[in-house]
Length: 438
Image (cartoon, rainbow, N blue to C red; front, side):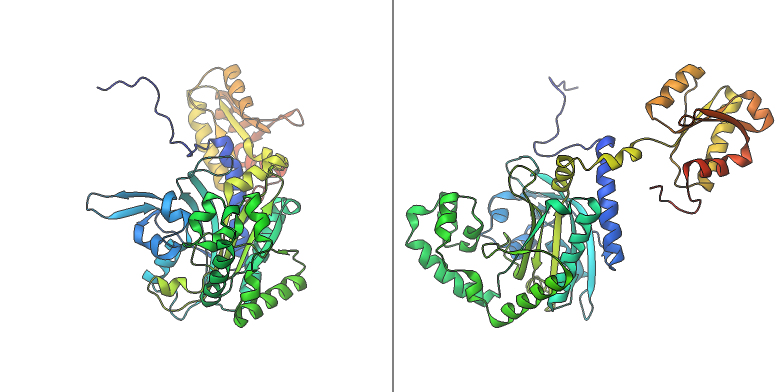
């Protein structure tokens, strides 16, 4: 048997999330799911592994994702496969395969891990998690506004809305971008000495990506460059104007950023980002836009579409940074801990606990297993910080009673088995037919 000198570690840029961590993940995910459900969006699930050609066709061969960030491998049958670097391509592929877009509108959401081989840094990992929504079959700016409203409602519910701002732009149609691309290249060719290596590499392959450079010198140069919004086609210009009017009417604050483009080739018309300065440097928390040609590009009918993705790791970092996770403390601990003394009482304690769970499904009830004296069991109970401890001994079994110890009010009472659930409901303010204990 092989021996290893050290323990096997997780892969760099891919993290474990322990029970104390998953509480905040579940809290955020439940809020997002509830909001999307209230707008009529339905969940879709699709594989995390897809044919590599799916991403090459949709994302664009000269993007950073395709050129250097994908996790590719060949399986035993010689198929070239990829761990998904983003979700929209897989969502569209699944929709085409199952006929979801044929003469139908679809409003979908999904969440899960994505994979990109990038240099790991705070809030940017090689396995990261996104919550996304996609709307298919609607051409007007009203669906763009709805998705922005959904994200705004998510920030408000999570308590981070004052730390986020919306940036908005239109990148027009493919034909208008082609025309603008030529003018941008001409301008940049006259200023090659002011371009960094990344900009030089993208100059002829994907020059629009230079617009969102982080290089200060290149940013200063772009202040004098042609602006994409001056070269929009009429349809894109009207669409963007109507979207801005809608957002003004709805009271959504935004800033038009003429340098905002998306890193994937399938976008057109509306693009947007929610950004924050509360993480030390400017970070994007959520990004989205229209991709009206993607369904047809991947083999389906022509279907207009728009979507967004939220980076869950960055949402968590932001909530931690502004100390907005104290509300989760009540979900870390259980409500009731059940102690039993003696073999007979252990069996009856389990029976009673199941009866209580049937009546109060949202109750967080933990039963002590493995025996031990009462001192040891109380020690174990206190680790979970319950509000109530139930104690059953052999005498209680004979009398069909149980001892209820309320640790908050420091009171103790003896209850008949059939009265326990009602008493717990009153003390903990639990609704019997609800699974929501918040």
